Image (cartoon, rainbow, N blue to C red):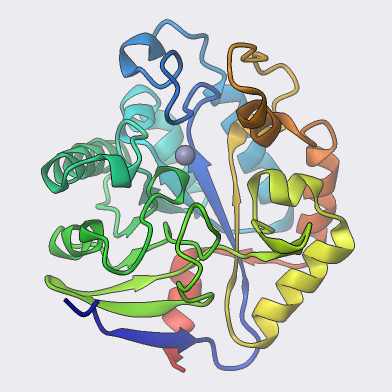
Length: 291
Ligand SMILES: [Zn+2]
């Protein structure tokens, strides 16, 4: 069966720098027998309030706007912080309910998790989210059935698909594109990637942002923006937390991804913010045209 039709999109002229934040707590990792079990989450000491508020304060100082993907689970426990993010002018979006990987859920489970998250975030924010990001870039390719579910549930855009193996398929578009799903069109807007260690790496967030040289990051960002691809950056409140629990039981590779370069991140992030103004995904989407 042929895949869905895809239409490449671009920003006319130079594309913006887009800031996104996945609003989750330090224990929201995927695929770990201990930490990923939601029945345990209420017993962990939450650090979300202070880390998230600190991040909002950093953005206020430069007048930056972000799209904030909230877990429904977080919105149910911190509704005041969802409202506070909206009050400060940020765009409220969805990161699912229980931080489950989309490619590990049946279509029915994915829809149920999405609806529960949408209801919890709407209850907190007073607005229905229209933008979505799955946990760990887990919408793998344009054929993924999750995209049609998102379109059917009223979402207009998704930011879950990368072209970096093994997370996404290498042939996925680097830039934004419209996918004609069985339930209608959905815009997919991939994260910024760059070249490092001889391969494509996640320049726009996580350990890529924390460990690539500032010169490599700047080159990756300039390349995307110059060809009309919004440069989508992604951060998590827990990355900025110097007192986050060490999570000793995790596999060494997972700990490396979660913890490498964290100590230098706050200063590095502030210097990066000072270079240019960040906009939300919604602002970037409004400028997109057929390439
Ligand atoms: Zn996440």
